[in-house]
Image 1 (cartoon, rainbow, N blue to C red):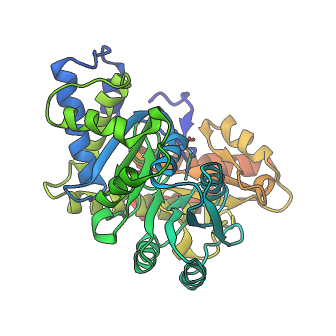
Image 2: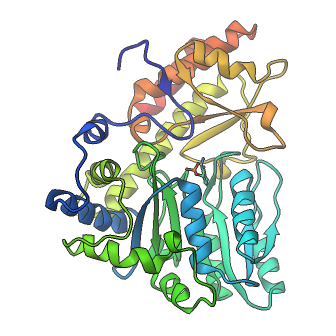
Length: 396
Ligand code: PMP
């Protein structure tokens, strides 16, 4: 990438790998062309591997964003009056709650302050007060705070109470641990523009057998375009190597999806091993960025290291410096994001380090350096040499 091209380090969309970029730029395929059918089928099979889902889980790929994947999930799992529990971690868990309320669910929130996650005891207590909790919804990584929940523990508790488990993994799938089958997760949803490594445009989700059965038992059908029942035969047809039409797939993105998922799985023939290696890469990238930023004296929004996501870092702005820092960083060629959580919107900023950038030391270094230069430009004394050394020593 030429030095004067801005480097995109927001928590999605992200920088693309050269192979994904090339796939996006290829000729637009027809959705019934045999080569496209083969691509789509392979992508669906690989989704089951990336999610570590069982053979009976159903992947869905629909043109749209992560919010659409949230809507699809709510519409297919929830009936009017169902009791659901939402684990509150910030902006995106509140969005999930609003989608569920509009579907007619009785939503109970398990509360946490910005930068924190509810405890497992809080979740148990909430579930114990519900006569029949239908599902627990958690945001695996809340992009507004950089907080990662213990998704495995949440799934275990929800299952103890007979509730389905939904993970909003928009800022997690591909960069955080996920074992959909082993943990008993019913829907893990994401979007293409984060750790999956594509441009925006695809809503992606994998549904368990229990989630599909729940759709079949609903009193109130989902909207047609969001219905598992409309999409499942299409996904099954593509996976079987045949065609079927319901609504036109985003063909360029699906071609790129096969490439992107292939990159995630490339390191090993075992999906579990390949995903563990991707996880390790994201852990190292996160640690490198945070070690560098710590040299500038920046404090992180998540209240403890266990809560800090691998995919992004949310920092507090230092004393005396406001949101103009983000524009200052952009002047040094790196695009980062401002605050999002309403409680800390003007006091924080966020850096994404996932997908291609998580395995590109130059991106991580350039980003930390740009933050240092911007801080300096705003009058803060910073030790740039130590920060750069800290980043590189983590990536050795
Ligand atoms: N959930 C989370 C955790 C997210 O980070 C986002 C997007 N930043 C969404 C949901 C919504 O996704 P989209 O913007 O693609 O609709």
